[in-house]
View (cartoon, rainbow, N blue to C red):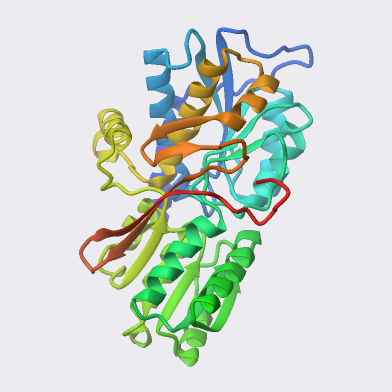
Length: 397
């Protein structure tokens, strides 16, 4: 991300934090949880760091959802308040922020837009306190198993299988994988390898780069040497933007297709439709969806943020997190964090990403969209409805 873009994101992030009504003062050790009429939500995301682009969009989605939930009394007589924290997209900072949210701010539930390492860091505090942690993300590794944890994000089979199946069906035979060097990057590489091999394709190489990488020169050279017909990226946030801008402007990429299952609409916009020519994306959200829930979401985003609305899968996921909590709370008729943990197992709701349901599990069943870019725009070319999650941690389905 350029310095100007980073500054604009930081300013927008600050505006969103103020809009959410953040209370920065610490509570004393004698503080108690919020009253039965006010339910305090902790919102933890990477407003700075590699996830800044998506986190700013997600924070908009949360702010709009909270505004509508309170206005329409979607959670009954309960009013939601929000305490926002920035985990800087690192587990160390996530641990510090989550400790404060749980033990000083005394939140009743936590909504997170975080990577797997940051989620694990946060659960050190939410789980012992029996506070529900709802992952309101676009995708996750599926490696976490905790009875207090619920993920509204896609996992391996939901995101990888539709993408690889489509690519192979359209002629991909030799695939190279470039991934961020963290748990989801390594797990995703294995999942793409297994699925591609099962479908008759060959993995001709792979490489990993630390989160925050801005120079992909060595990776592009490795790709050129391997001569794949398709490159699948498993890169995070701004790293993905940097990769596409370098790869697609290198003449050696000519004739190669690209695929992604971590790319959000905000990232796609930052890359630009021209550089995304011959790219296929697997995602749980499509702006083109004609569903009632998506129309309501888009209208609410534009009504509040106008031309600055960052409508994306990240914003939709955060919106879904707040609404899933509100719907579950009203259905179970409780504001008890411990009782909500049990009630969320049967949580279901229909929103901008279609029908979402936990069905007694801790990972959500949802619809996946395959979008193909032709150089000017993206078009939905495939839809996989109500895909059942198969997280890598089989003990916590």
